[in-house]
Image (cartoon, rainbow, N blue to C red; front, side, top):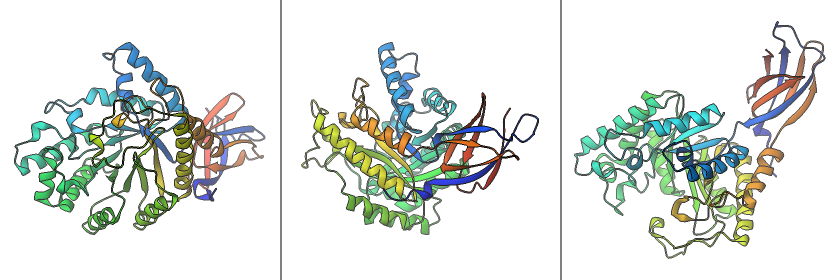
Length: 409
């Protein structure tokens, strides 16, 4: 496995009691609770779990998903597709999404919103309006939603799949014509500027399934135009064929050249048969049954683990949505893409990734403070608990942390 020193840090900490006195000669247990690195998935089913109007049987199944999810991951993508989030104009599902976002934050996890602007799943009620009216709707939507969720959702895919957007004609929508009218880069800049004005502290992404020169050129053009991209989103859905190690290395080389953080935002590796190569548009593929198989599950575990090792070892990668669908229940295209089966039982990939994240990439230390109440914590970067007897305190080990005082109440 490659060196992971870029994921680790070392910090000299001074422990003080509630009176402000050094805790000398104290046995300390330091335990990593939450990685700085984002290991994630989408968590669309959480909205149902928290909705009292959803049938109890469905909510109970989602609770099984949740118990497994929080054992493994720390980064959750919530659905803000305008067609579904705002099926009726000016009547967004704010309460349901806010409930989910707050739930995640209250449990110590990071929430992300996806997406703010996308030509697919844009609402029919936008059709027939002028380009100016459609643009104003998109900007108003950004101001409303990025503003309302500030502090709960501070990471956003601002625009989704802009490479294909100008020429998209698979179904009628109002966004692709707007992109053709304005030009791709001017539209992207206007959207990003509005999101930045609304939440200056947000992490704003461009996101795409294109991983070739066309996407690289779009990003270069955006940066030259002054678009405030904070991170580059890379989709890696592999329904039809698996990425080779060489392809992944090439993608990393291509997009790391910008010096920006990389987020692998949507990953799919199946535990069943691949999508036929004759399928041109994935949403058109609707088999009656797409089963998970024992052989497929073993292969899925092996390939996900290999990809995780590569991405965690790359210093510019800050997030890996390990699987777009955490469970096969409700998975995109009905594919066997999850870490869990439809009934909530766990596939081999779940245990393989848990071993990696919670054991191989974990830090657990027993330390002793000196006469000044000091000791050194060295391990994977993230949020820690420190325990001395029955007293506990929180501590964050970060890249720039050289010394820190931790107080026990």
